[in-house]
Length: 157
Image 1 (cartoon, rainbow, N blue to C red):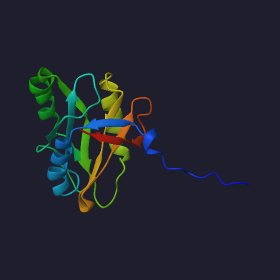
Image 2: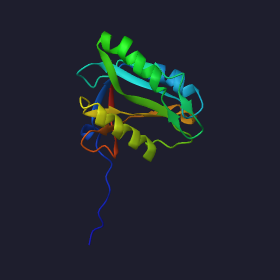
Image 3: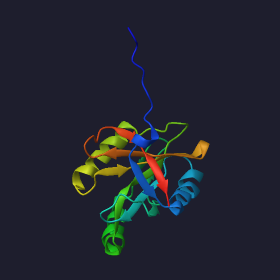
Image 4: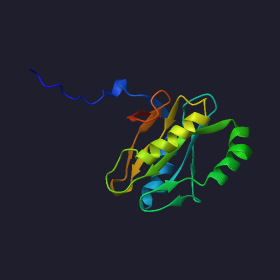
């Protein structure tokens, strides 16, 4: 009998997220140049999955193994600046130590909660930055499968 082989998903089968070049540059110049477990919020026009803006979370809580957004600042910015400007949260980006380029169990629990309270989101953009390799791994979590991250394809504009 033949042994089933695991195939990597074809690029054409991956969820696509449109990301502004400037966002990728800002992410790598901030998070990519700092120790692991720093992060920020990905933002874009209401009603789309496009990522057009990035907010580096200077007030976050982090350890060598965890990143937690500064929720008070983010909530205030959302109400006072982002939503009035027609943009909202599309996800967050943070870094991991070594070459660990997957979302942790804790990341997935947090993202699942955010998807529950943001019923307008069909996916949550959650790339991981690996500072030691100056690399970004595109990941998303889909609303219909919130306990699993999947690779994504970022189309840059």
